[in-house]
Image 1 (cartoon, rainbow, N blue to C red):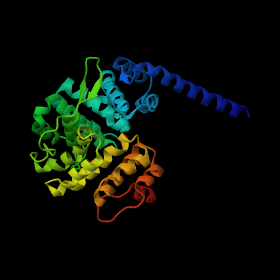
Image 2: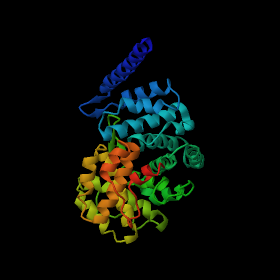
Image 3: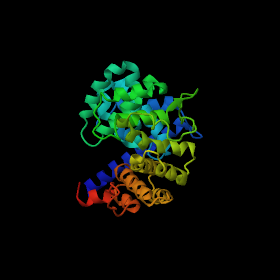
Image 4: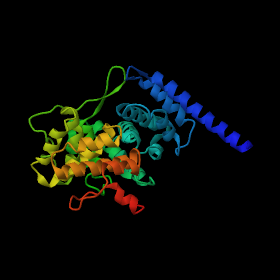
Length: 331
């Protein structure tokens, strides 16, 4: 009985501490506006207190009730602070939480501080990560490269990515370059990070038609995130754009890329996620969207049970399986 009472007390203390942290974190925001200095204080305090195994997890726990866009921004700030305090050894602290924001911020600050000569070392550091975050880590390198070079140097940035390991032509360094090109984060006068999508010109497929073949899959994979911004989340328009890609070999990558961003933009709500994907007029496109979104939910949202609500049965011939298949095989 004594141990039960002690256990209850410990749990109560932990809940109290987390609640206090969340309430104090509210001071970091005013009417939805981020106060970066206070977020950096949170990050610095945690990094100086906890080890690499749980520092970032403790940070994300403080912010887990906030809007997705705020989560990504504060993770970006954590990544920058991480590099300032720990240096390049901090690669192992980040994970995929908050849409890889920790990696984005870490490599942005790393590359801007040390230049492109550090890329090979950073790539090797990503290779030491245990688990499924090596590709996400290298995605962050891509962000750092393009921010360092500037968006007018897209071709040069993609060439630098060739110095990194990228087994998948869609994911990795090049996807980070294209994301940074399409929807960069800029800093306003208050020091807040603001998503600033590039302008929509006469060709919605720019720059994918002009990049080298080896980079096209990654380019088309990243376009839907930009389209969501410039077309105000008009699912049917985005679906049609994917279906009508002039280079038909990349239609699948486009729908899979859209599914990847639908889940976080829907706060990983399986019903909303599925509903959005089902607005796509193409039957294949709708399925690919659901399958990709379900993977995002399985790995970053509510797990396999929520993922099943989005994509409960794989469809042969579309080249992308629902995560429920992996669950049933205990992969």
